[in-house]
Length: 267
Image (tube, rainbow, N blue to C red):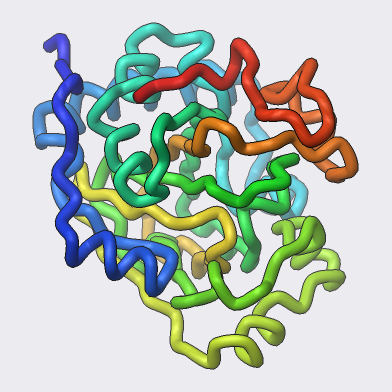
């Protein structure tokens, strides 16, 4: 199979309004069953390549490593995965939801949560991105069935516009106890988290400021997700960010738009 993802995914006005209000949205059937099967095989192999030789038990890994297997920037190495990462179909979702004239790639990453894998601690993705402007978000595509019991993401509605914005809301900060993001979120919005059970090929898209987390993988199956992070063309680089050394922004100048070979315009 040679999947063609040149078509745009139609996001409805209702879905756009939901995203604007809540900071996340469910998107059914972003990939067809055949496309999902094809990409799952390719991404499985890439994850195996990246993790081969690591025979440690979960109990022997760091707290961060126990949360998921993280394999990023796959499009740079695997031409088959590039078809998804730089696809018009996936990027069109970001364009419609982020309301950008043009959309750039930040990076992709496979996130596989092993059976028994720990909960993913609450965080904001923007804590990892040296961006002064917050017009960025992530599509999370289920490569297989993903249920709440397996560690599907929990989103806290409205946190993307609640004034919760800093570089100290990372997973590592939550693990170490430095982050009180759930308490901050509760005071800011006081809303219950929302979680979706995803079929293969379904996706969610969430804003970079949306607070989210997962519960442990309580099943005997690997939770398989592929993510792609996008940002609006024109987003400026923050040289004061703790993430200023992120190589996607290599060569960027403070307060100037991020535009590097790692961050091409897709659409």
